[in-house]
Structures are given as C-alpha cells and as structure tokens.
Amino acid sequence: MVDAHPPSDPANQDTQLFGLFGLTHGWGTLLTVMSPQGAGAARAAIAARVDLQGGLGQDLTIYAGAGRLPQYHEKREGALRRLVEDARIVVLSRADWHARKQALGDAIYG
Image (cartoon, rainbow, N blue to C red; front, side, top):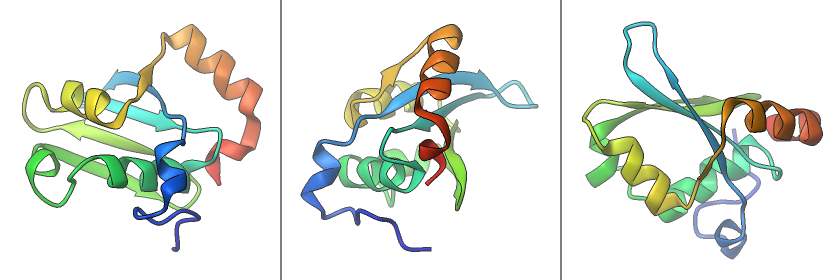
C-alpha cells in the first residue's frame, strides 16, 4: 500500500490528527487516530513527526493497514503521552470522537 503523502511530504505538517484513548483486551492502553485527510495521511503524518523506527517506536506496537484507522498500543508507560505530544494529536472525549467521526464520514478510512 502506498500512502497518499509519504513521510517527507510537507503536507504532513498540516495534517490534522485526532485521537481516542482506549484499552486492549489485556487492559493495556491504546490510541486510535483519525484524520480528515484519511488513514494513510494520518500514518504518514505521524511517521514524519515521530521516530517510529527507533526511539519512541520501540515503546509502541502499531496496528495499521489499508482501510483501517491506525492504532498505537503502549508497551512502556508514557509512550502514548509522548506520541500525542510529538505528533500533535488532539485527544477527544468519546462523545467528541463519535461526533467528529460521523461528520467526517468514510473519508477517514482512505
């Protein structure tokens, strides 16, 4: 799969990112991310803003793929907080997340 905006693309600096915290089946913490520009743009923007190959990437497990919103699972405490700060993700309440998701429609999965 090819992202619409590769990590080096300046468009990634303008990509809006919204997140919702949740729990994994094993009670770990996760963050689901969406963007009006689509899931591929969200992944690319985070990759452009955060070192996911080393550094912070060592503290996260990433679940992402075509047509699904990326999820970041915390391996070490504090990793998701750092991701939110470094990637400039606006964390929403559950109600705000659902309202935003409904307003954006299927574009978030692109």
